[in-house]
Structure formats: structure tokens, C-alpha cells
Image (tube, rainbow, N blue to C red; front, side):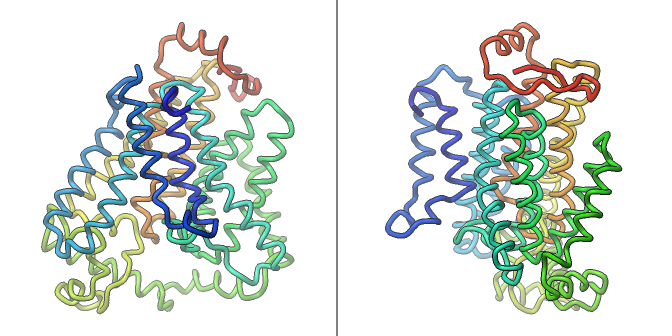
Length: 425
């Protein structure tokens, strides 16, 4: 199937990268490099196909390519190349995946399929985690798959929050009632799973996402009211230990964990100040020797994670690398804003407006929650950036092409034009 249609390879690649199903089994497959074979086969299928051979011209794709080049240079001149090189190998593959998604996802049908794959892959752990919290009474934390970028409870929490708006988009635009109800139940379990991670950063990101969704939705007041009802039911769902941990958000200046984050941020700044163009290379801030070399009052005394996408990129790739990364973030937001402008008053493209609004909510959650987590290179987030470029390209396609796709493609739910949301494919 991949040889016949490279988009199938993209879907399989996303599934293996985001869900890591080989981490959920026993035996030899658990450590098998399955993703490499999927990626190679997809690349071969793409080369022999009639698919376009260049990524769509967009600031996001340009920024991702530029960041890949810059991080390669940073790795070559890294303060500890042995530490940086394996991480470069992993992250460059994530960048290639995001660019492959942007290149091969050329229609709404493909875009819809990619979103479904992202939702199913990460949503698996969200639904399973929510069920675990209900069965265990919330006394144990929810974690992601072992040896993955979302293994940590904090990382999984943020990934699930960024996923929630995409779930909601699929719920709103699905034609079949059982799919809509299934997605609604999945969203509820995802919220429970987020709380079950015991992640304070995820809770802050969730609050930001709810606020952003309230602003972007005509049902903003109802959403806030629903959130208040859910918050009021938490004492019946979660144990006192959860509230004790969340209460430390109010006294962050006295929290040792937060103080450690601030110290790591200062170390990242020190490294970038000494190497402003290329930084110290991937995870330089985690190496004891480097941390001691760039120690200053208030900075870390031993290696530890950067605990911020911004300081992570700053310490790894310097001020120039951070500028490129911020450009990608800004370009992703600009893409969604341009989609909203292009679809205003267009009931045939109202699905795109709905998706753009939900993507903006995801971006808000990422930018807020990522301020305290080292997830700058998570492939799920890079794919989200790429999908904003795909959405803009699909919206800008000629009306004739869109009409043909409507007649031949799969069917989605027809939504009231007053939102305004209409039926298209």
C-alpha cells in the first residue's frame, strides 16, 4: 500500500513515531528500529511516485529546514559531540517527518487522515490513562510509553492538552453520531488523564487552552461554566495528594522544583551568551562538566534538563537557533490567521476555519505549557506546525479542485452555516 500511495507511508510513520506501539509489547520488537524501515519505504515510494517533490512554499517549512541546518552546525561544533550526536539523529528524523507530512499531505482528505492518525496515536495513551485514573482512584501517576519523548508524566500531559483541540475538531466535523459521542468520551478521559499526570505545568497549560478556546468559540461562556463544574467535581475524583501538589503552584518561589528550573534556565543563558550563534549543542545543559564550566550565581551546579522549550533551544542552538524556532512558532500562528481571513464568509471552507481555530488553541497550550517543559523537538508538535502550512495550502487551492474533491472524496458532517461551518470534503 505504501508503494502505491506514499500517504499511507506517512500515516504509518506517524503511527510508529507518535504512538510507539513497539514499546507496548514484549520480545524483540520492543527494541526494533521499525520506524527506520517505514521511513525508508515511504521515501522510496515517494521518489518513484508522481507526488510533488518539494515542500509547499511557506515560512513554516522554510523555518523547519533552516532549523535542521542550524542544529546540524550546532551539533558539529557542540561542546560535547558524543552527547549531542544521538539527539541530533533523533531530532533530524522528526524534522524530516514534519517536512514529509507538509509535502505529501496535499488534499483535505489526506489532511483529515493525518489528523485522525495523530489523534488515535496519542489519544490511545490519553484514553488508557483516563481509565487508569478512574480505576486507581488517582493515587498513581499517568506516564507515556517507555523510551519515548512522552514517557515523562509532564511531557505526556502537555501532549494530551495540545491534542484536545484536534479531538474537538474531529468531533464537530464528524457525520456519524457514534463517532461524535466516542470522541466526546475520549475528550473526557483525556482531561482525566491530564489531571492524573500530577503535572503542574500541564494544569497551567490546560487553563490556558480553556481560556483560548473560550475566546475562539461562540460558546465561550458555556465552556468556562463546564470547566467550573468539572473543577468542582475533582474532590470526588482525585485524592488529597493531588491537591497538595497542585497547591504549590501558588508558592512557586518556595518550590525546590521550580528553583531548579530557574537555575537550569540561567545555565542555558550562560551557554548561549558564550556561544551566541550555535549554542552548546543538544543537551549541553545536562552535562555536569559543561554546567560547571558555565556556572554563575543562581545557575545549576549539576547537569539537568532545561525544562523549557525556549531555554532548551537557546542553550542547544544559541540565540540564532532560538530566533529560527520562534519564527516557526510565529509562522504557524500566521498560517492559521491567514486561513481564518481566507475563509471568512465562505461556508464551503468553514471546516477549515474550525480547524484553524482549534490549531490556535493547541498552539496557545504549547507555548504556555512548553515554557516549563523540554519538548521543543517533539515530533507531534513539529507535525502540528507542518499541518498549519498544509491547511493554508488546501484553502488556497482553486475552487474547481475543491469542488471535484467534494464530489469524489469522503463525506463529513454538514454543520450549520451560522457558525459558519458548511459541508465540504
